[in-house]
Image 1 (tube, helix red, strand yellow):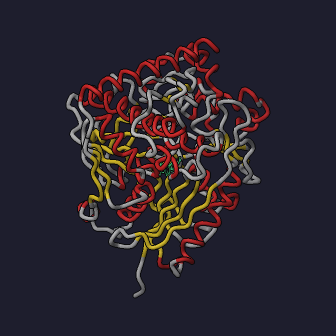
Image 2 (cartoon, helix red, strand yellow):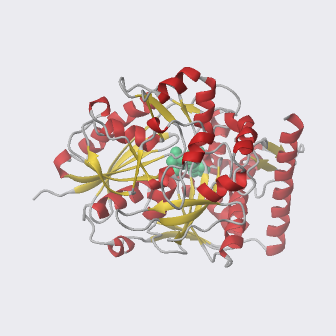
Image 3 (tube, protein in one colour):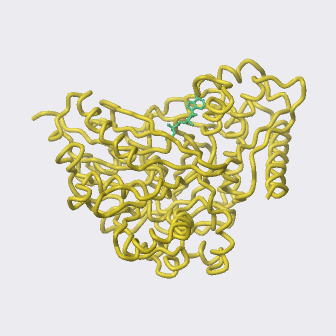
Length: 502
Ligand code: ADP
């Protein structure tokens, strides 16, 4: 019998990848394409969902063709995706009726106070595990419906469908206007600010507050479980798992047990701690979220610390400043100097996420003197990610009651040695990266493969985890703490500046 594979479709913020994995967890092929980012106003970030679907149509067949694999050899497909991003489309034509409003978008900042008057931020957090912030889907939906009353009327009449990116893709994969499945999974639904974290169902009061008619909502399903079979762009692949990208990388790191944690460094950075079957409410400004759910089993929860801008700052240095031509060059440039020259960069492009949740904060560079070179700026750019990680780890340690002893990492930025050393230095604990790259896609593949019995159990997957690299702290404690205080001061300035210009 010919070899069989599991496919993962990873629809990320900047690009979409399709990756085939074999039984040993090896990547057999990878096809990847970027899509356009639209920044129509300061703070606005949009995607064209139709363009994203056309990218999916290209990468799936390409990944199969590159490995000379027939669709019949793909035993399961797992879908993973950028979370929170809102897609609204016409049920009859299958076309988006509004640009997708991306998770980083801050247009709803002015709406948050109004929302809080209808339901307090504490009550919203109690029900959803989420701080009232522009990051999540609910306020974005309310914004669209308030700005476009005709869309609201059409939504009430049942003519439109809402989904995060997973819903849009699964609906299209499974037939679109010809009977596509309108579904989402609990991990994605837990980011909408519309789902109750205990009942794992849409919450009527929250739907009222966010002005969301029930008719637009997808069905919430478990993470693992067969949703349907693909009709496009390739026929016959069983869609066996759907999972938000950060929960997927937690799964891909085989962080299955309570107490397991990981931090992903991509466009943003995301620290997740598996807390088992109980949703733990954070006392230190972290998010409570669903980690995954197998069909017929209780949900597994996580605490999450998210920052909006990590690798995104490196992209900004490339695209907006022309400081570098490729992301990897930031390390070369930073290595031309031995320290940051007194310079700190706070990348508050979407306000500041955890643990500050300050929508008004604006980015800042402090400590400029005639001594500072572009090398120092490059170093400060990388250190910004390290210090933001320190902020998240401090909050996680305080919530968990026991300090982390090491940090497991993955994501596009972890190829950067200087950054990984800076993270170890900022935290004062070792940083560990596994051999396996692409943990987001891997997590989706693992979830899909487990659903169909491609892998017997989770222990088999744990056996595939291998350490690739480890970085140990090299700076003295007093210097680490002094620099952390400088960082915190720079953050305070970014927040104050936001208040001055508000
Ligand atoms: P996503 O899944 O969010 O699109 P990835 O995990 O693919 O992100 O990581 C891409 C991000 O990592 C980009 O923002 C890019 O700027 C950054 N990046 C990639 N390589 C490096 C590097 N060598 N040093 C620093 N940043 C990098």
